[in-house]
Length: 216
Image (cartoon, rainbow, N blue to C red; front, side):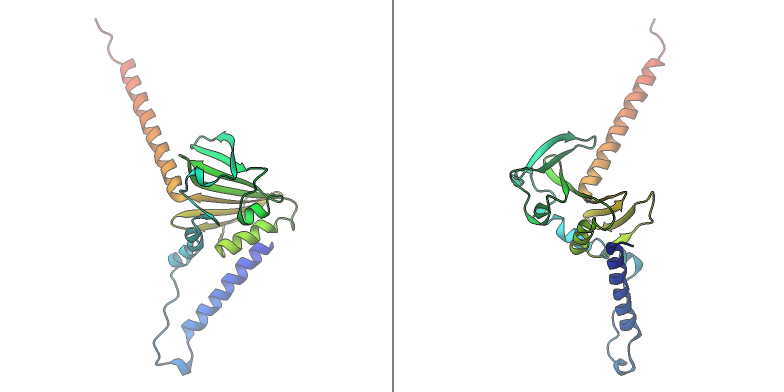
């Protein structure tokens, strides 16, 4: 198990122990106001994304900021099918903050949609034991996450907030930390649905026209 997994388990275990002690109480404390009940499963899961929502982006920049607030970036010229444009830090002007300090160890991509900050990815390559940098920063920024079942040799940890979705994926000699604005993800889904409906309506109209009786 990597350091990230161990830290997650230790932290959650400590929290569970604290809740158990508070709930059981002590004879000497009987008669005092009862402690608050332990959080429900839904409330506990919501806590996994609380710090991600509070940060709402990366240190120094929030999702929704205009592209003009990022003078340290230059376009990669990559525009994906969902309308995102990718940017990377300029060679002569490293990005500020932690990710800029470790630019020689990480590969970072800033994603903009409609010229607004919408996503961020950072990756680190190397064998096991040399990819702890991103794992440690993810734990520092977002706290313990929710571990998904390992699949295809990759371990995934999630921080699923109301505003932000964060994923940390480790495997195959590569670690990736991906942050996304959920409001932008929702807009992407809505745009796709609208496009599908428009295309379906166009196909239906074309089919109807093709099957119309020939004029006399």
